[in-house]
Image (cartoon, rainbow, N blue to C red):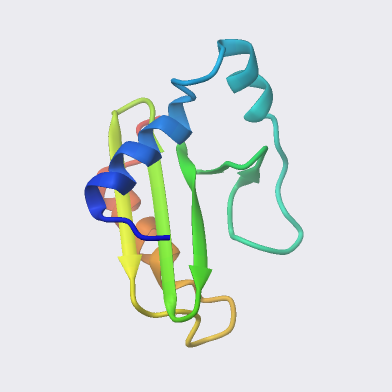
Length: 109
């Protein structure tokens, strides 16, 4: 995927708010549960994860990690792209940076 920070910001808000979906579809796709393995979300639903009130997704591939999350309560979107992948197993550097940033900004709850 080729992207930039502005693209990520727009995608993160659209993903989290479901603005292109019917409200019933958005509500259904946010029904999830914690994962036993995989990305460190509080819950993972249908193509979207939630962490402390922030909805979005992270990803990784070939030396690159990304974490894009939106907080519907505050309207804030955090986009983290890093040209570094798991230097330590399951570390996910971009997700760690997102979590630190989200703590500074507050959960919005």
